[in-house]
Image 1 (cartoon, one colour):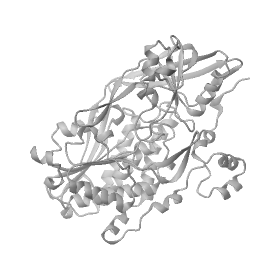
Image 2 (tube, one colour):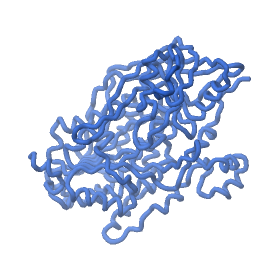
Image 3 (cartoon, one colour):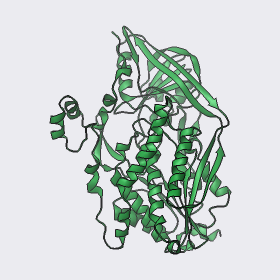
Length: 518
């Protein structure tokens, strides 16, 4: 008997987004399921209108923000996602708006066209040279045991995994979560070590990294590392096998220190991983065969796109959103780009004489390969008279609820991590804007910004919302998991924050230590 999971349909790969057995009934009896599942569409996704309860009725001065329409934002998100899908349709297995590729350039072209449509001025592109970039071009992963042979539709090589076009064959060893206890007494030298990873929703990472499992496998001589991605579904993911350890700096902020893992590696989705686990569990000897072909492409560049709505002073507000992404990258970061364009459109309607500060919008380049635009702003002295920076990134993902091994969708938006650097007045007006439009946040503010603005988060007053959920950097990051109502709430909140920031002098926005250093 041969089992080939590559034959699975797209529909089956999305089983996790529904409500378990009921969705299975839906596939076999569509009419009955539609009657029983009024919040779901024909693909098992939550309907856009099911999120309408999140929309707030605006009163008084806040009615002006009704001009920001979530459906319009979602349409822009879909246009950006379409660029990724062209990459896929052109035959790239490593597809999306990948940094240094023509699809990132196409995204920059789209961003510039939006800026020009809205009449932004001082348009320019700032190119950055990229270090040599890793590109996988072809790969395969199979497992054989007894009379079975498995192929895995969700298997991707770990990012920056070395090329081995002639292949590796190794005996499979299951080590659970890969803790020291799991490795105790195990001989993994020369073998394919299979690790069940637990996801860390809200940040980038998984237990194989922060438990040191991948580093442990390398140190003990593994020939290959195979990570099984979390739970719920069959995500294909781009993820490094590097190990990460969180450390706290003297000022109380936390950061991750990376330990390089160079052993060849793969990640696969939960459903494929469960099939592999069950094969190992038969007690038969299981052999894993893997092959990866990669290229290191030198001489690539990535360019940020700048456009400005001039104000009446020499002070500036920056609104930024990174353009690159893996797969559809609907949340990461077409969502942020859509919100940025929505803000540009809203403030473009404001007469220049009524704009206290210039607002510079930036589609930033190369985020997933080092975010070169952020230090550029700092090093060029562009933040000296900055009243506010807003980073639009991972804006409004649907909330999941874990149920057994499933991730069930809800008709709400997940609470987001948040960051404010500046005065108490800036903090108060930011949280008031979130309350006004129903933007849900985690109770504790992050110790620093993350993502695109991380390296400059204290260089000027700054605001960020971000969420990195279970499907980040996977083929599960699709438009239906970014509801229009969520985009709308954040865009309206950011617009209100900018308006209220413009009623305050620069000194009133800055943190005390920022004022004292000037």
